[in-house]
Image: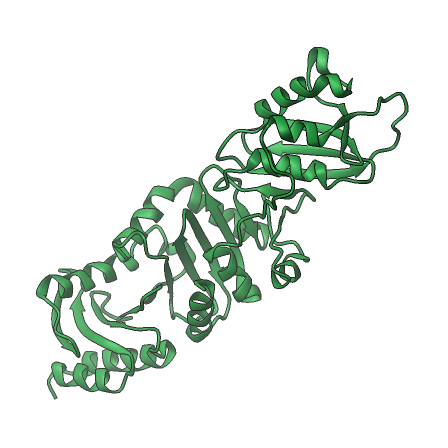
Length: 257
Length: 120
């Protein structure tokens, strides 16, 4: 489960969109990106101080590396013979294979970093540049996270007027925000009725390419209205709390820009 | 005053609206309409179908509260469906662009529904 990190609005203003998860991990690539390998290598390349990088993939795979000064010192969590393997220049092909095994296309990749307590007993390590050359990744080229999509922008613009929401995308973990009981209610709706929700939106707006928002309630601008939206390949379900229709319209049109 | 006149007056008083219809949601039929641009019958019928879909489950689940209003926003415009509190098959539906003041339009549409229900 992920949610909005307090820094996220500031990063968006600075045109450096990043996504954080509530568990402290940072999302390097989303399921709709196709640069998962490059994202992992860039993260290593940008690590100057001694750090343990714990990469995780939405497919369930993990990769833990000890890194310092753009060099990979140790493979930490790979099983059997590679467990805790101190790396040197001889291990380029081994590590290339490990990274290729870890990264799967159309998956979300996250990283968690922690200071590296000790580098005792480790060799000089494997320089990231040699690995990047083998994997044909240009470390000079930026690998920006895709800018936030329509629905992410929409939730940011509505802010506290959306008391709870779930952003669902196939192949990625759901992003959630709000009180646990309401989120649970919305999760139930997504888990048990995803196809029906998609079909309901398709019936309301048959042009499937159009980003579409449906809000239902006792009154559109009532204290408690429910919303459902689609855009790109994402689906948003949420509970509105006192948003006027004008605010909804403004947020929706601004989110498309 | 005939219902068509009421709908025409409402359309004239709602900048950005292009079509306003009175529909019977139980039969999915448009009973009366007013429009700035002429729509073929199948598009009019589609409005009532979309209204029915808006008020349907799973989104309008009874546990999530009573639902009488539905608003649809796309990148090209606005659809607003207001259902009667007393007879849930009666609804007024509006199609327009983003310049429609939805809050004001919803209030007027609700008033018209009350007015229609009060008629003998």
